[in-house]
Image 1 (tube, rainbow, N blue to C red):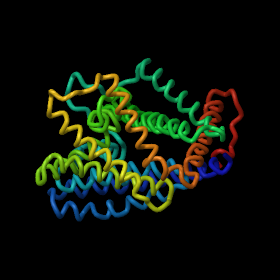
Image 2 (cartoon, one colour; image 1 turned 90 degrees about the vertical axis):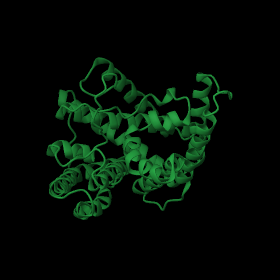
Image 3 (cartoon, rainbow, N blue to C red; image 1 turned 180 degrees about the vertical axis):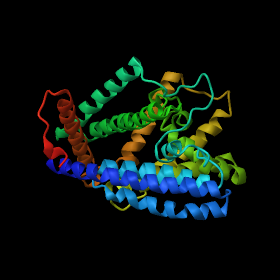
Length: 350
């Protein structure tokens, strides 16, 4: 874990510089877009920002921060800026600067004015308890990687739960902090994916809703207009596969293999098959509980086959878990120092 801790300390020193750089770039994007009408002139004015952002994740040496910054800056931020250049998407140059920066660079989406929708507006005991439970489960899962005798497929199942919990914790933390700091009502990132009843339900209404929200205006709607809704759905899954290949490259620094793209294309085809089947209401459909098990089973099995191998190959998974262990140790030391029950080890930050 010493190597992971050293890499983490180095990245924590780099983080303020990267944040400053991103704030400057996005502020420039807001300023120039406020002066130009949507279209080619605005697109050309944003091109320098769009060209620089893909290089920023490489400033980090840890897998988690490279992958997370790649997701935030390259997938989400660049897509939002491209939509802005043509007057679409969640961004608008009339937004206050802080809100514009937050919506550009963070995985958050303003809450629609729907009184029945959930949002992140305030802390609650239920939210704190659920977050603590997820964090405890995640910590227990991370500790399992030390047991070398664990079955390979059991380990992959652990990784499935790990990815869900870590994503929900990280993305929810971004949303909660942003909503509290800026007073914005934000939509949640996940909607209980373990209750899904179909692949359409899983990908469209439950899993990583921030990605769905950005793929809809950038890919689905334009393709749908010219080629129809089925082509739009397939284009969304193909794009998601290619972007995941890029995110995996940021994380592992290894050449893409196409396996992750194949995973999403397979799921896109299956979603279209579900769509076709659902049109015939008299055809058999499984009970809700059975549909949930079948859907989650299909996601897990295909992930074992195509999604996880690029991450497990080369020991990247062990490096990721070692980084998490280093983060946990750093947080623990920091917490002890704050409450005065431990001795602060200055080597963690120097």
